[in-house]
Length: 333
Ligand code: KG4
Ligand code: ZN
Image 1 (cartoon, protein in one colour):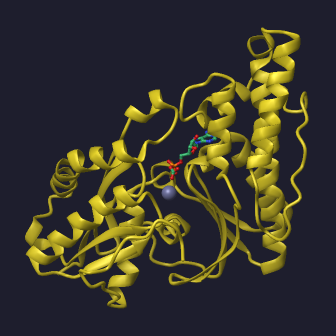
Image 2 (image 1 turned 90 degrees about the vertical axis):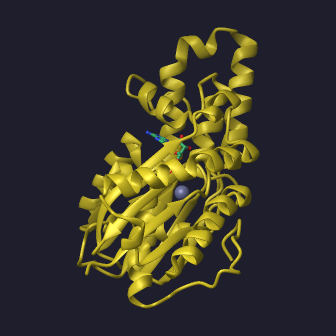
């Protein structure tokens, strides 16, 4: 009999359920909450209420699409953190009640670790060690991955995540949330070297994106004072210049990490991995350092339950099960 696991992901604003059977993803259903786009960002209270509304339907859909019956399940996995506490509580309570009623083990998965291994979905052989970069609206982390459970965060943001910086800069120039994809699109027609933004000198492999966001805000304000149509006239160049700076900040640190840890493999995950300039720069880096670049499929880059199911398959093999009184956590410990 194949090992079959149902995984639930509700760490932020996406409700997702996935079935994995014998290491292969059979379904990955994601419901993205569009309500937040009008509000300029994720509103935690709205997110958790939406998860409550969606979770049963999404789970049913994941079971149906994979033709798996509830009684075929060997374990239930869920994201236990980090994330928005209210959102996590919906998914983890749901997973716990299923584990209890079906009398099968509960597997609690760390969201960041699952992102770090998302490129291993549907793969049997994994080349450890590698450096993993996770860049999204909630995280900016560089990890040194020695095995599935030996993952060390070697660099992270001290304030905003890079996706958050994309979104906040986009908001300043009047773009909808999430603004990252709009900045990416506008940048294609713009000059990335037209405007310069200051460097932030953060030591080691850590990042800081709040300073760049503030200097971008003052740059826009100053220019609007001189010409109220400044944004309209220069939007492509503004987008391309800020995108160039944000991507440069990430690539700089990644180069240092590759050298320091002397790895021949890197993986990239998180929503910002969709960025076209970042992808271009990563392929340059791949050639420069003679490394293998593993980028997750787009569907597995953003928040999704398939990456939770994928991580749970390793934990299941090692019988790393959780008790029902385990509590979700908002920040990595
Ligand atoms: O992984 P994700 O879906 O959710 C979080 O965990 O946050 O990432 C969403 C983030 C948003 O900040 C969004 O603006 C950013 O990823 N993003 C992009 C692009 N596509 C998504 N940022 C820059 N360029 C893109 N093409
Ligand atoms: Zn995430």
